[in-house]
Image (cartoon, rainbow, N blue to C red; front, side, top):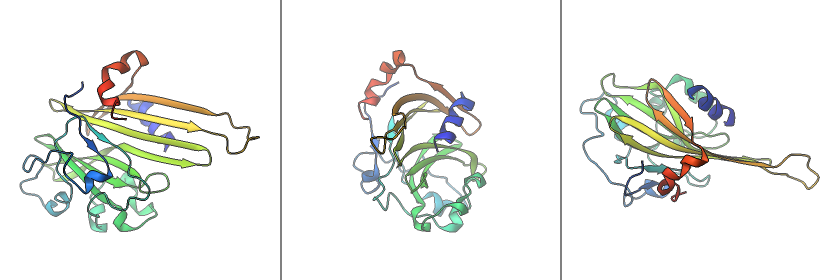
Length: 230
């Protein structure tokens, strides 16, 4: 997981008045997000039933965080047939878990041609990841490129967490992504060297390319209103 994210960073290498947060609780309630009934709908689609499972949100520096391990539902379950719509590179058949654990989470309009679909997918050990997919309305299909907006895990003294804030500037989708890791000793005489990282990345997201730039401490203050949601 860590290697995959860092690979994306190295190889791929503002703030709104009202912030809205998506957590597992908003999957059950629409009080903290603005619903927009028309813009994120494909008028005619062979996959309309699939698309309708994703709750419509209006993107406004919206925060995405990983669902807790014990949260069973963040949205409607996706069928095995519907999972075939996702990029082949996901290798969904290799995931261990119940079919019902694959869930539709949210959707929003990126531009007149593209929808953003966020789905609950497996993380390192459990269904803790939220991944962003690009749905092309003209082609009527999910495009190959995707991006992990949230996840978390912990095992044998190692922990990590990813969370993201997404917003649009014109037709450009952007993300401020926070990546945290921690290494701790399991036993007092453990020779492991303890460490912790807190890194932030400004990312331009598109189906063709994901551009990533690490944010220095000097520039981090520009995003303080977003980080106050952390």
